[in-house]
Length: 137
Image (cartoon, rainbow, N blue to C red; front, side, top):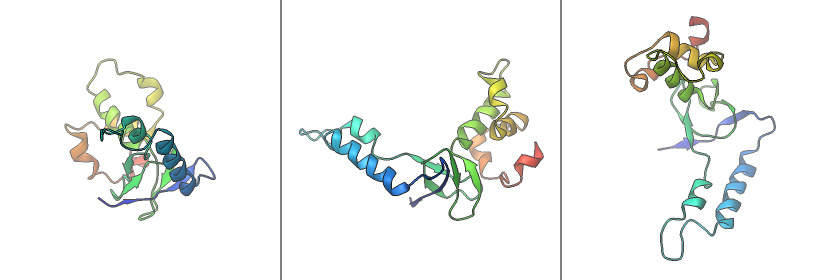
């Protein structure tokens, strides 16, 4: 899997190189990725990288830095939490009293999932024209 660096829009002034160094420093502070007995040092592993997200528009995999990202491949701008918000919206449409529903309805990805529920959000997510979805809800 090829994971690319995102263009981080928020927070402003975010520096990917500095963030990677912070991860490396944390791993070192925790004693490295393995204990002396060869077992994985899960504390260090948890801080080794930021996780990954995918661009909703073109599906490229990106490192999960920041709160708002721009895809380096297609230039689509999106919040890092687009997938959980969308999938929670789809799930909430099937519930009678969804958790944090009123607050989450302010998020366009959640709202779209709630207003357009599908049987399988994961199977559907690559079929949605995310560049056009905001005007569709």
